[in-house]
Image 1 (cartoon, one colour):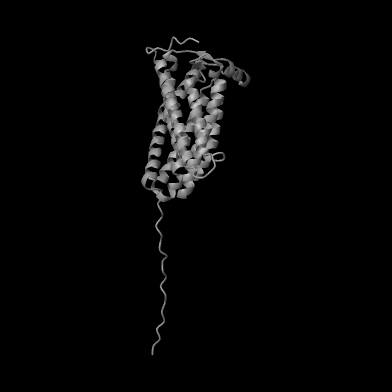
Image 2 (image 1 turned 180 degrees about the vertical axis):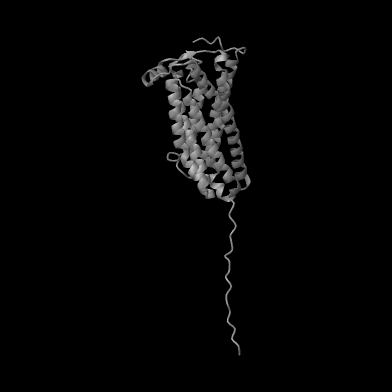
Length: 299
């Protein structure tokens, strides 16, 4: 395996080093968070206690670390290393499991917030998150099997819609809390707004442009059987920045800020018992008193 490309003069090598560094920091943060959560479990036996949000986070963090070590662009079949672990079949499978875990984290946290705040909007949106992302993953697999970027357009559009809904739910929850809880919810809503803008102005248009270019060139797409074989057996090793330039922005953000979001959701287990303390109670309304007629006897 040639490592001649690992040179400071190669932007791809610098980018890959950044991915490795971020992944190491993310794994360290995961281990630290695990220790904090174990310390907060009280008298629960270690053998039987488990924090679902931390488990889901671990899958996501480790899945993203794997994808950072062995980056690949699915439809183009480009990779950095010539190994079967770089195949789209392996990488997309890891990504699918990790992304479903990430979606499940959001569903759990949002539903819990909605339950505490008595918000039907938040609870209903929370219930829709995982089903929508399952459909998005189906479109993703369609894209990588057929090499048709339309699947990526639909996949990332569904992710955008999902987080738009989450942002709406969080915005509805902001006035129902106070103090640190209100600040954290508002910050999450602001971060999601930035994500939605990025997806709507950069990511989805990028895939739409690729799809349109393929249509104009008359590109032939794979069928199911041929596509599955290609996904499992073909990968193109390249360290050329021109091949990776369009992937660097979204991958860098995905393997850093998205993972930090997952770690933040996992830390929800440390503070969720405090939520009722910061819940804004609706003011009690006084029952209107009806006038009572008093009969006065005349003497």
